[in-house]
Image 1 (cartoon, helix red, strand yellow):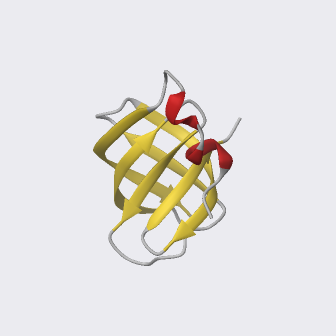
Image 2 (cartoon, one colour; image 1 turned 135 degrees about the horizontal axis):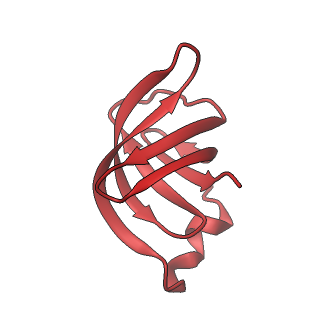
Length: 88
């Protein structure tokens, strides 16, 4: 089930279809996985990773192409697609 932040913000002027590459960082020692950022808005992003890897609750999303470097909380995960909410 998608979070409200990602499913209802399509009318938000800051909502953008992204389709850019990035990386998600997590764990100790720090691990990195490449990802595709499908969608983003002021409260979060939808990403896809290459495998069905279960991410921990807290990660960091970095995408130079989107100028994003943001700590995030995993709101939902459906296989390789993951909904992230930016941590405040």
